Image 1: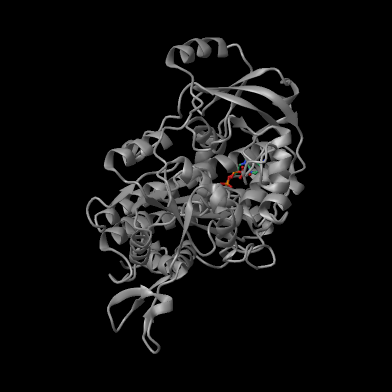
Image 2: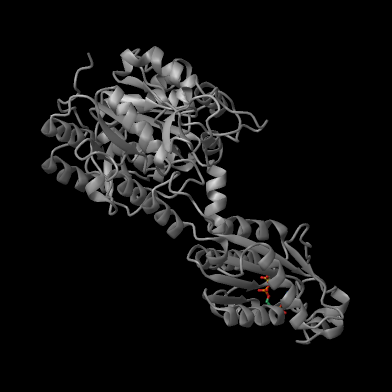
Length: 569
Ligand code: PPS
């Protein structure tokens, strides 16, 4: 029978007096500003969540973890927990040095006593740990594009835990959870690891899993870093809180885990198991395609959907946590209840809504039935993902000086304000250059800075539900692309090429600038002495010759309506 994991475990924190004096000394040490992922890793190192690790992996441990899923001592450990740094920083730190590890605000969280410094072979790490050096895998992408080139290894002395201002009462260290279980007399506890909102099927399957294991249930969602594109953790935690009421009283607990996931499938499942053992759990639910990263660049699954369960089953004695099989629960219409898929009678009608379908219904404000999710959960999701016609977006005009961008942008702004519902901001080329970019000229470098500033402001407006209308020349395709990426993280980006020809702009010469440019009195003038890269695939291209402004603005409105960004509702 599984033994309760209640006794306290060792942490890496020093006493508060030692922390005070170390903090003063640490002021003189080389200091490293931790990335968000490193802050997550450090927290779990310090609080014992990553036992048996006592610091960031040394080179010998790293090599052994990559090749054999074990530390050099032979202990099971599937995931490299490494401190990646820049080449510049690595150049002035040597083994034997101490390094102060700081959070984003500059607070010293820990001291690393460096024993190892090496340049890893990242392709080997990707293949060994994630199964392929394929950048469609988020952790492989991170490894090659975000992580620094050099790793530092060594033991960590913890001075203080990273500060969390959100959901503080829901966060527990391993020892706090152990104490909680001890207090409640929970000897067998099954963990449900999740990075998604819980709907009815999850509630059914978790409760069933706990009953089968004759255990209490811990909903243990990851709130550190999950898969890019996931529902943000603020929304998810409000959803989990709503679901908590649906379990019988005093059977279930919710605790948040500040883990940075790698989406490493089978290896990650084993890692999750070890982390849960450290948190005092005795059982864990391992689902189909546990911690799966989705499709690879050949559009195939990275891992077999049952590989995680198989590996966990093989290693569960060493992990120290028993696996509970995940039963897929489906809604049977005739019986108006959830049942395990393998127990459904032949001929019965099974209802389901896929993740993609759910997102579509949220986006379009369509019905989400009660058999699928709890109304309280749907309310939270709708608050975060309002239908498209209530989300923010950016309309980005680009074209030559004098092409009519500003005039159409102004007309569009007025028409959108007439409709109401969302705040509208106009970031016109001239206005931006007066207020945001007054020190900039028209070199490529300065134009790029100018456009990125506009992109940043537009992305903030968009993320917060407003409409940003931008009307710069924005002559470079790569910079427009960068702005699109920035904005699309929070809403739609509608690129509109105002395709008035250079000849026509010069003929109109509204500001008299073309004449000056031709005379060489204005340098680097777009179209005359500086390039303009036409958008290859804008959402809309407008010809202005022979049409009035009203008609052009109308075309934009029709496009926005077609994209679902404006309309009734
Ligand atoms: S950019 O390239 O997007 O940063 O340019 P932008 O900020 O939109 O330019 C705004 C206005 O600056 C005037 N102007 C010039 N344009 C192009 N090249 C040079 N060298 C130049 N010098 C001044 C021009 O009138 C732009 O106004 P619009 O509104 O486009 O007519």
